[in-house]
Length: 216
Image (cartoon, rainbow, N blue to C red; front, side, top):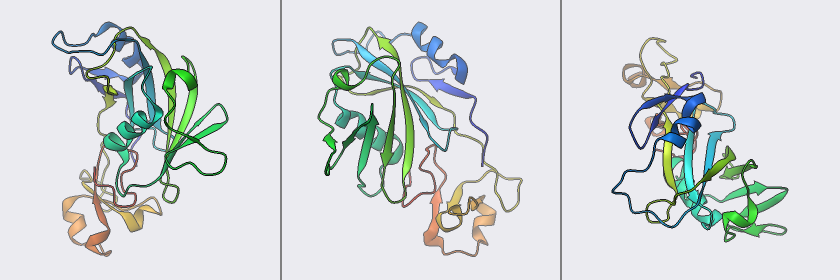
C-alpha cells in the first residue's frame, strides 16, 4: 500500500498544494466569480480515511445543511456501492441513516450538532466497514453553489505499485486477496492472477478501494 499522500488539488485554482498547507491555501483562494452561492456561512470540514489516511478531502457544507446531505455527499464522492447503512458518531450520540434503538436520525442540521474544532466519525457499511474521521476546521463566510456540499480540495491519487511485479503501477485490486492486504495488480499481472476475474475491482481514489463492489 502507498504512503499517505502529501499533496492535493485545490478545486478553485487547480493548484497542487502540500497537505499541511491546504487549509491556509483555501482561506486565500476564493470562489469563482461566476459561482452562485447560497447565503453563508458554511462549515469547513476536513475528512480522511481512518485506516487509509492517504485519502482525504476538504469540504464546505452550509451550516443549515443536514447530516443526511453530508452523508449523501460522502456516498457519492467516496463510498456508495450497494446502498449500505451508515452513521455519524458525534459527542457520544449516534446519528444513523436507518435509526435503531438509541440512534438519532440524520435530519439534524449541522449547526445543531457540531461546532468549529469538533471531531466526529462516520461509518459506511456495517459489514465491510469503511470508517472516516471528520474535523470541523473552521467557518467560511460564504455559502456554496446551490447550497450543496462542495468539494474544496482532495488528495492526488496515491501511486500504488503492483504487488506481483513491484515495478508497474496497480490499476486493479483483487477483493479476495485484499482481505489479507495484498492483491494490487498492474494490467499485465492481472492477466495471470489466480483468483476469478469477478473478484477484481478498479483502483480508485477512495478509502473504499477494493472493498465490497466499490468501483468508483
